Amino acid sequence: MDQVSQAAPPFYPLTESNHAALVVITAVIFFIYAILGIVGKLIIRLNITSLKDFDVGLLIAALLYFIQTACVVAACSHGLGEHRDALSDENFGRFTKLMYASRIVGILIHATTKVSLGLLIRQIDRQGGLNTANMILGGVVIVWAISGVFATAFQCPMPQPWLAENKAQCPNQGPIFLYNGFMIILTDIALCILPVAMMWEVQTSIRRKIIVMALFCTRLIVPIITIPELVHARYMFGDSDDITWQAVSMMIWGQIALGLAVITVCIPSLKGVIDSLLGSTAVAAINTPYELKHSGNGTGLEMTALSDSRTKQTSKQGSSLGSALRRHSRPRHNDQPLWRRDVMGEVRTEIASGSDSVRNLTEGVMVNRDFEVSYDDRHTSRADSMGSSEGAYRL
Image (tube, rainbow, N blue to C red):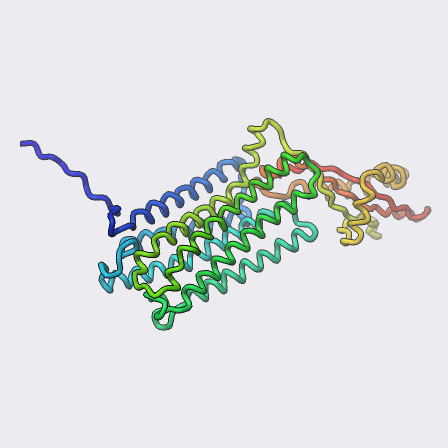
């Protein structure tokens, strides 16, 4: 008589009294999406030669995300999604420890993705007030991450800070969770404002501006998903002891937010793919004024960035003084190659900088650099003029 083989039972069955499968499916699916996003980002950079700082931050976030997902799946094996009265004290203790660890690691994931995106913006624009605002925002993110981790680590009384069975036992759990959620929302919104400000002054078509800003502003989906996560965390402020059952909805939204936090860091690298689909590249002009002065030691000209007040003044003069540079600062005999060689050396160094992913993001951007040149002729008077040099940025 033939034996009929029976299918093995599911690892996480979805029943009326056990919703752990919903959390596991969400956590695993969005982790896979995040890994695919990272792999796609690296594939786009076919000519990658070395990892940049924002790449390292993204890889660290991916490693932390793997650890956090493992903690969530393990928590589902020890009671998450079930009713508290159906669990043993041993399983509940393991559940609280795993949830405790997953929240701390989740804060670090959000922080590293924010820092990685900020470093990418800094790689594109290192000048002026935007760079200062970017650095300040990075400092705010780091301060929040440190304070959030410590606050979560000591949210409940010692010697068991992970044991948060109800509000009476751990009254600080809810306010600390809201604090971390609000900081995630505010810093993500600020990260979306920076690229908009960066592209606002760029001289390019409206369509190109919208494409670049839209790629960065996809980050807005993270705070949008974080809002329902905070709403479903209201059980932390109640008197119910059934936290293993009530935490399901909050964990689902939280895992979606973490996955999107990693994915949205990879999305700006799609700029090159979108350009290839559109059949053209973006052309923009970014004014970056410098001041060139005679070094005084016979080696040529030295280039220094103009101050903010000088920047505003020189940017108005523009390229109309380009002919003045060629007319007034043309030295006699063999002096001309000296300053031209210095200027071109500085420009080529700037063009060569930048990572491959940044090249794909701002492919075809034309950078217009204004120079103030002071040519020192010992036999004639000093002549000052302005000029412009254009270099094709393929970042």
